[in-house]
Length: 231
Image (tube, one colour):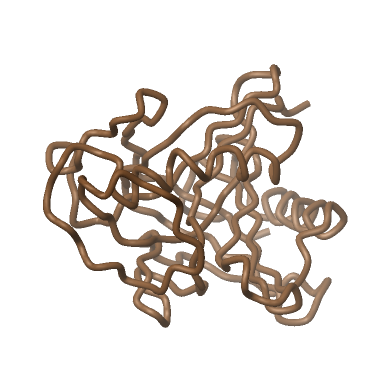
């Protein structure tokens, strides 16, 4: 049974688009990936499973106590948003890559960092109700060039390259839709012989101003092999 600590890639508050491999329609950077294989699920029209190879990335993260994904995202937003909007070691200002619909109060003395997407929530190795909320850093930065967070709760971490099986859907991210997507991915893994290397993740690409009927989501699961076996 999966543990309950969860990890969220927090895309902050902006109008975000699913667009691979690297830029959304409004210039918001998304994780760089290569599509290795794709297959229509047959369960819902236009829902497609993709096998993707992602490159490494750097994230800013903070750990919070929460009872569910939504609460974790809400609690984790403020400290990460403060870091993105300038509550960090003083430096130059970087132009935002997307309109910001909600701007938290910040010190205004540090470096502003461009928006990215998506928001992703995944269980990890603990069972104590903690969530780690993560926001991908723009690819132009390295660990050496990113400004240091002033908040000691905010950490910078490297995420290695990995292979993910993903399924997209549009609309409400209900428990039923997430469960159906997870079931479809499990079937795909069984049919292809791919071996999971971690738990499921639920990723969101749109900001709070996007109508629920238009919100874009993905369910993801990391796997060991990049080469699917034909059933």
